[in-house]
Length: 606
Image 1: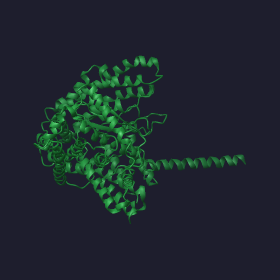
Image 2: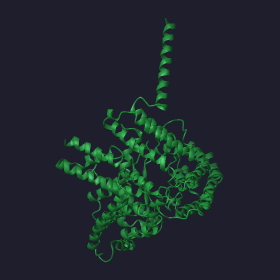
Image 3: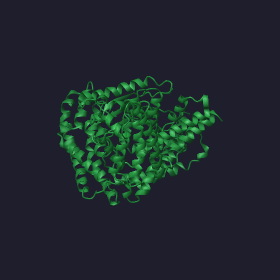
Image 4: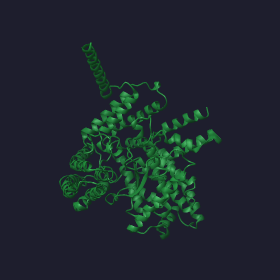
């Protein structure tokens, strides 16, 4: 009897094992049996291809086996081609599911992923070699040190070992970048000359400093010093280990990239827009669609920008005149304000710390006063930090780094304090609202904290949505009464004008074939921003075409949808409910967001 039971039990175990194996094989290699399984498989295959992404989100940090923590992303021509094929295969598999069978969040997930994959397929088929993998904004030469010092966790000795392993992977990442650059050059795609010169200067400076002063050395030792109970013997020998790794792996990797860029100086002669590249006009039109997630043409966006510049300029003129500044163009009057001592911080370490403290106070104030506007808040905290000194040149005036999924790392609003004139007192509030609360941190942290949706919905940013929300948040803070001072409101309008001008200069350089100097002159005249910041911004648009359009296009769409909801719902309109509809579904293309709002209004007011 017992033998018979054991026999049947063994058969059941084998059958279950076979079924489980079949299910795993189905999920990994074929069309998964459910749409949700497909969503998660697609995310995992993307993520497993990027050890750096897994580190940044921290979603697998709880696993005992850290199979990715000592690795960097593979950079190569073959990897680019593999990823392109994977995206095509994923889109084909997605379309094998009957979209009509799904509703609610499943249908929304389908639509968002289909839009994303369709866009990525076009990128892979036509434009994989048109972008610039080494440029002054987000090149591997600056992004890898930033990742190591800001994202790689240092909690124990094991994390230190992973840090050293990643340093040893720098040569592969940099040689792969050279391979990609060579492939792009073979296809007639070269970065602007100024970008080659700027990356060369920053890389030479990076390896010219003694190893013991390099941020990869200094930052790690500072973080280890903060760890209690770190093994004393390891702490004692770590400086030598670290210095040897940087000398053996990191500096030679930079020398490889420097040698290639030095040769490129003889061939990179143009500082013009991407119209100069093969199929440049078609490439820019695709970049416009990709970044704005709309069907607006470059010509339409240029006209939109001209109209917005004129509107905002009139509002700024009214405030300036009310404060006694009536003579000359608005841009010149704003430039004069930027030089007034009452609006400037001291150009010193103390002055820079005062800027950071002012940002912290602004964020704390608004976080305590948003109950009438939001009924959901992110759990993750936000910190204000200075942009690392080694990354200041070429970096934006400010940027945001999202929190980890496991809550171990907060969101961070980084302020670039290289030039204190770029942080006048009348501009502090608007920048803090954009980068922290209720802007990027508020939106992105809420997105990472979503539940009941596929993982990709918690991660994909969609530039027009994310940046559109952050610019919308600037106006929202004013509407909520946080910028009653006329100069603070002037700072808000200057920031909005800055984004409106982007519509003109980005399309101007890449579509209308303006020169870099023509774009700098226009932005400087219309915004009154410091010339150093204007120049850096224009050079940013030249190496990342179309991205700067997303801010104002996204804001305009969100204001349109809010006005639609107010007109449809009348007295029943609740701004908190509208914000829930926009925020609690995560980022998405603007045309899909528009449909989501229409569906909500149909439910609220059939």
